[in-house]
Every structure is written in structure tokens, then in C-alpha cells.
Image (cartoon, rainbow, N blue to C red; front, top):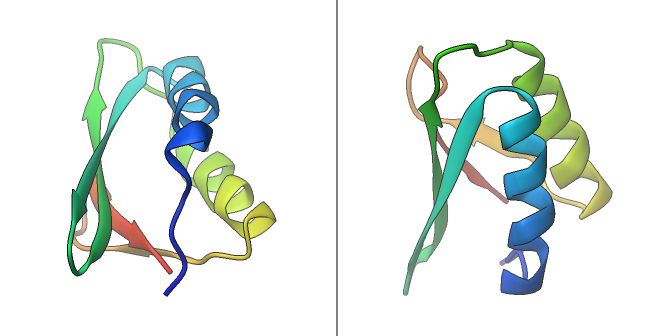
Length: 74
């Protein structure tokens, strides 16, 4: 199972803030999940940026809902 290092979270948070979001890590025995919290001025470019970030870590993003606010990366 691919797991994002906790040391990588500041970089991920920096990316999210750039696009008007805050990102949260939900870590559990079964793996990691993430949620996006939209701010006032959001940019849909966040999704491409997230996919690129995780791709660099050899992981693929899988969104849980149509709004793409909850996802995992495997």
C-alpha cells in the first residue's frame, strides 16, 4: 500500500492553499484519506495539481464524490 509520508504534508498543504483550499489528512489503519476544505476563492486547478503531486510519489488520486472534496491516493 502506498502511503504519503507525514513529512510531505507541508508541501501538499502549500499546494492546496495556492488554489484556495485547506487540505486535511485522515490517517487510519486501512490507509490514508484526504479532504479538501474550500476557502472563499477557489481554483479548479487544484485537481490537476493534486494529481501531479501524487503522481510524483507514484500514487493515483481516487475521488469519493462528485464535488471532489474527499479522496484517497494509492
